[in-house]
Image: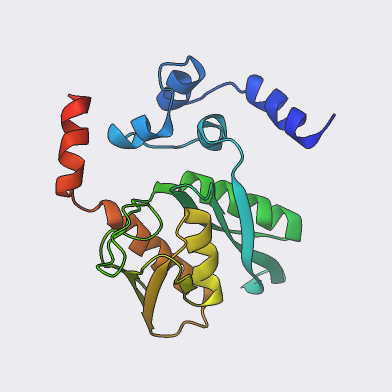
Length: 218
């Protein structure tokens, strides 16, 4: 049995424990857009697996952390993982465990629970192609001392960003963008989270382009 068949069998045997999970399993919620439109919480990773099959993930940082207890010093692995479908959805998570594999699995689960929609567009006055290849307007995100500003770029520019930010942007489906950063970007988690929060801010308000779509939903 292949890995895909095993995952499919696991989804079919899934027993939801939350209201959103039951609605998804019964087929009453057929897309993840509907979950975000209704502002429903995602508390089970199977909800994301059921509605967004074929997610990619990439480990952007692995470190060793230690904690002092009465029994002595405990050493654990900490992993930071980004998941996304390269088509408007991305998530970021971190996990800690005594074994490397379990830390990555925990980080993937947290990233799926933190998945968000990303509004894409062509906000550059130099391009105006109308395709969803960049961000529609300037957004910013801040985590710790790191602040990331994303600005629309014309088609063909590519991802002008650091390696960590490139992973988040690529898995979100952004192919062209200008980035400006401040703070201690060597902290991989804060750098990735600042980029993640900037992408989340693309849905902070409704633009005139969304008015017609909103009327169709009514």
